[in-house]
Length: 375
Image 1 (cartoon, helix red, strand yellow):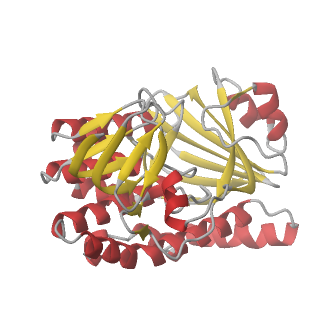
Image 2 (tube, one colour; image 1 turned 45 degrees about the vertical axis):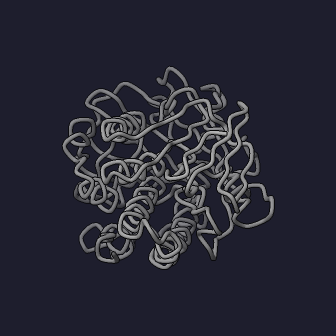
């Protein structure tokens, strides 16, 4: 049994786990990060960072690195039946997930953090803060920060019941193609939409989502075929599909959800990121919410390291309403994107065009958030 009684044990080296590790390591709070894979990888995935996520990275003094490895999009455009119905000034930075992981991991390690790869969580003793892994190793730690994603074993311990993620009704495709496109685009169609954005000067990331009863496996790394992708996204113009078909490889996955939580902690476990609130990706807030969670909980741990229950309670109080609100807004955005009734489509397009020239109050409520205002 490895003794780490004075360490915060972070389960999962995704965005929330790495960001929390950075917060703690830079403030000399001992932590150890457990990652089930042998290395970090994004498997051809990009990420868009809206102002609320960028604000967290700025508070963490990481924006110089982010600027060096990301793209400031020149414009965001939304198309409906090949007609532009929305065009707005750039507020997003886009990049590869792999580069974001690298920036966070390098910051964590350079600040004295410790990470163990090939540690796939098998079991938890919540009362004694013990972690058991499939490789046979065991650890006693001070507190468990659950950043282990939508399939979180920690979440099941918090809820005291086993439950499988629920298929959202959407499945998705993603890939990378060579392109010098400098703006973000969203193409809307019946029961489907496609998002494209640059992750560097020469590479375009895309995600195509289709509303379907054909639930793909909840596996981020599953490969698919160009032919199958074109069939799923066949409601879009050939011009767009031909661009996506230039990808060297494409990945497919089912988009799954979890019910809203009333509590974000139980005893010695605190939930962050997708372990707490996996959401459909239609507002691009999954990564940004993970950053917000980690920054808030990290700050509270730093301020209340001798009273972890206080840190947990304040974290839940600060985050729970925003988490649930963003989840609801993301689900609504999915319904809005995939309308098929011509009258409803016309009304949606009118409102989108109107918000091009006025403040989009819905987005402003999301993007204007600064966690320091609540700490």
